[in-house]
Amino acid sequence: MPILSRAALVEHLVRTRIAGDVATPRDNNLSHYRKLANGDRHYWLGLELGDRWTDEQDVLAVMAERCGVIDDPAHRAGQDTIDPELTVDGLDRMAARLRKAAAGRERVLFATGHPGSLIDVHSRVAAALRAQGCDIVRIPGGLVADEGYVVQFADVAVFERGASLWHTHSPEPMNAILDALGEDGRPDLVIADHGWAGRAGQRASTPWATRTATTRRSSSARPRARCRSRSPGRPRRGPALLRADDGVHPARGGPGLIAGGFPGTAPSRGTPR
Image 1 (cartoon, helix red, strand yellow):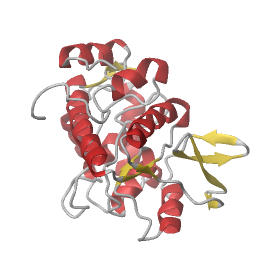
Image 2 (spheres, rainbow, N blue to C red):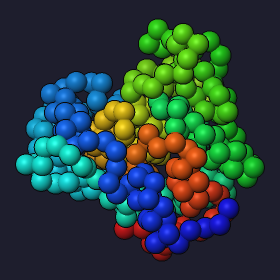
Image 3 (spheres, rainbow, N blue to C red):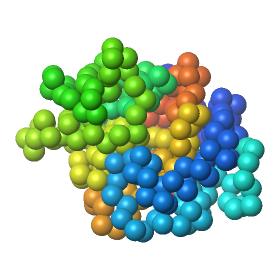
């Protein structure tokens, strides 16, 4: 796969609406920031936020800084954004971390709470790491969480209920996996999203939690949670964060998102910001 220049990658992200003017409407984002600030744990995405983030305006401010949403509190409806430059910065950091995993033949766990659009992306990265000698974690069978099952398709852990794969923010599937693996089976690296990523970070399971910043179908409070996992008191190694719309079909999103991240490839630019 050719390595895109930074400018070409930014153009791809904006054209496909993975970043730039994304599909999540502003009022949806603000609603989720408010629910996070009001203590709705559905929007904490597996992290324990305590009483640090109880003001909706503080959440908006950190989202504007870390993800590039519009910082004007008076902007209540219409278009919202993700800064594509921040997305590429995250891809550079992820590429560096993937190269490290490949060089060390690390044990890597993949999981997604958004299987409709992200399972193919995660699966392709897993295949690339396996080709470099990494051990892709196989989760134990029979895991149960949230009245459903934690299963694995194409190397990616997902949540199943009623013979369907579900979109979920819940951290409980990741809890089930980490509890079953135990200390001896603990992965060196977790590549995940939603509550799976937050809980891996919260439990200090090498929390290189990746994706997402804002989505079509749920909350862009999500990156806010990822940013929190980098704060003092959380695990010592911070996550590589990708700010991106996770509702984009992989036929448009996958190649652009992972092009800079396969083991052995160079980052899209020099030293990350």
